[in-house]
Length: 148
Image 1 (cartoon, rainbow, N blue to C red):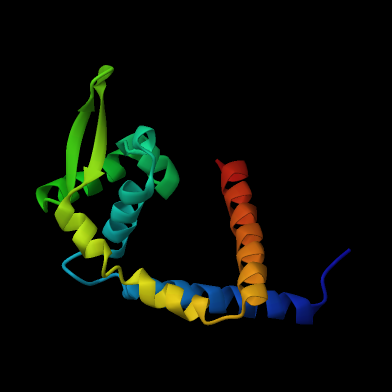
Image 2 (cartoon, rainbow, N blue to C red):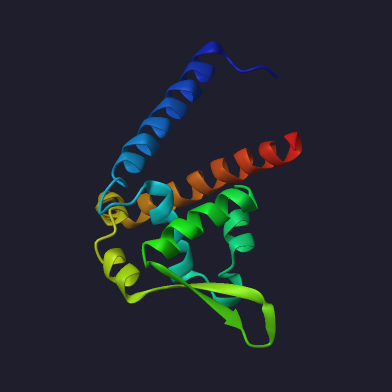
């Protein structure tokens, strides 16, 4: 079954709106001396359970290479936003924890403004948006994985 030209154009228009939203949200992340990817890393390490606070786990979450994740972590350690903590049970494993300075920065996370726009939607609209975006994300991740 092929899609009609109007449904393809509509899907294209939706994809373009989603990309525009992504770019706007991304541009909000250039603040407090950080880049959007650094904010993403801070959020990740502040919320992840301790066993997932490693460079490898972050690289997988952020869909990047371990080397790129390691470079980002190094910048955040240098900025005194993350600290390395060896795991006592396995000294080869290094966990990364946000510093008090990082937690203070996260109080003014630029993503909160974006979340506020979503919070202004009705409860049912928020649930529907979350469901639809999750399905789109899963579809994109599946395509990416199939291409790898």
